[in-house]
Length: 189
Image 1 (cartoon, rainbow, N blue to C red):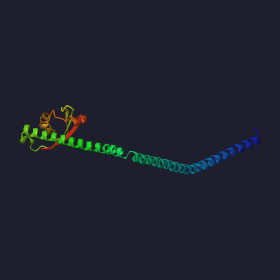
Image 2 (cartoon, rainbow, N blue to C red):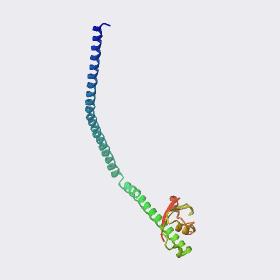
Image 3 (cartoon, rainbow, N blue to C red):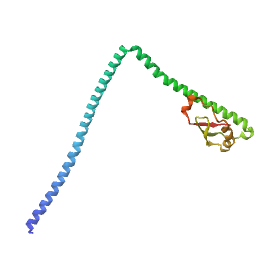
Image 4 (cartoon, helix red, strand yellow):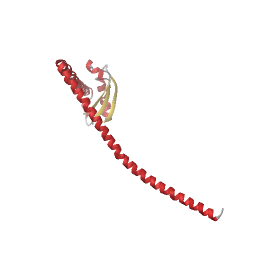
């Protein structure tokens, strides 16, 4: 290769590198600007879609309200008699179930304490800390498992047989659908 051709090729190579660098810089700058320009456009689109969706929801609510008014005009008495019991009955049932479960658990606690007082001597109970137990109660009133959770282990061993004597329990039929159930109790001295 002649020196003249060589210098032309080197110059062309240098020009290509400079053009590549300029193109990369140009591409980088304009891509960043185009992304920042696109972001507000997307936000505007979401705001527009939100406005459209809210207007559709408002239209649906207006239609529903109009249907309710028509139904109320046509069937005032039927709607009133149907809606009131459906809303009040579940609340009353839940309150009654909760009350009966709480009274059922209170009854179990009383029975456990009375068995402990009958079966364990008071001198053995002195200086004992409380213990926490968990009992799995079955639908038929029997217990499946009596577990020591934490507290005084020796106190647990003293009262364990007394707790077991409480079973089988009499469970009301209305409560049986809530079993098997864990019953947790802290037995205090």
